[in-house]
Length: 306
Image 1: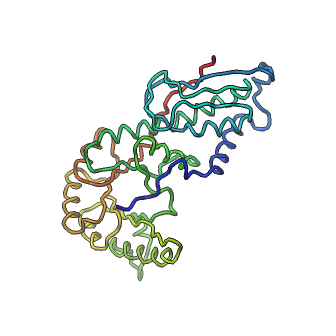
Image 2: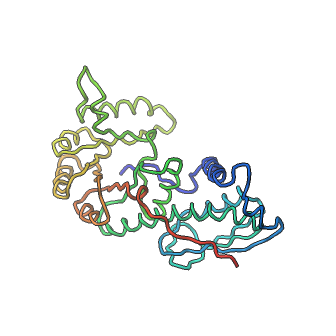
Image 3: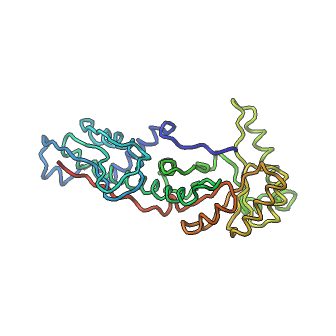
C-alpha cells in the first residue's frame, strides 16, 4: 500500500514556523509593542504561570511553544510536562512558563491560539478514528486547510491518529472531472482510463531518472461504478469514490476485489461522525474527511498565573 508523505515534527521546516510566528506576532505588536504592558507592567517584573487545559481532548502543538517564547523574548523559559498526542482532561497542566512578565503577557495569546487550534483538530480526528475502530479503513485529511497553516494542521491530524493525504498539488496526481474536461486529446476530453495512463507516463518520464526514482501517487476521482470498472485495469494507486452511498461503496469494493485487488479505494464527500462507521464497514481502504481541518472547534486552554 503506497501512502502520501506523513507530517511529523522532525520533518517540519523551522523556517516555515518562524515565518508563521513572525506574522502572528506582527498582528499583535507591529512596530509599537504591547501598549497595555508598556503603560502598566514594570520592565523588571517577573512572572510564572501554567498552561492549563479547560476541556478534555487530544494535545497537539506543544513543540511550537518553545518557538513562540523565543520569538517573543529570549529570556522566557518554557518547561513542558506533556507531549503531543497525549489525552488530556480539564485542569491538566501542559507546562510552565516563567520569566519577564511583559514577555509572558505578549506570548500568552499566541500560545493559546496555536495550542487550541491544533489540539481541536487532533481531538476531532481521534473521534473519527475511534468511530471506525475495528474496520480496515483509515481516516485521511484533505487540502481544506487554513492558508499558511497546512503543515501544522496536517501534523495535528497525525497527533489524533489520522493519516495525511497529499500535502499540496506538487506531491501527487489527483485527477478530477475538471481535469478530464479541460484536458484535450485530439479535440476530445480524456476518458478516465486515458487520463490515468497519461499521468503514469508523465510521472515516469519526469521522476524515474531522479535520485531514488520515487514516482508520485496517481489517484483519480470517479462518481459512477461504470467509471470505476473502466479505470481498474489501468492500475492507478487510488480511486476516489466521490459521494457514493454505502450500497454503491459495497459494490465498488466487490468490483475492485474481482478486477484489481491492488488498487486502493477512498471514500469521500460529506462524511460525518454519524455516517463514517457505515462507510468504513463497506470495506473501503481510506476515508477522507475535510471536516478534520475546516470544521474543528478549538480546544480551550488558559494561562493560570502563580
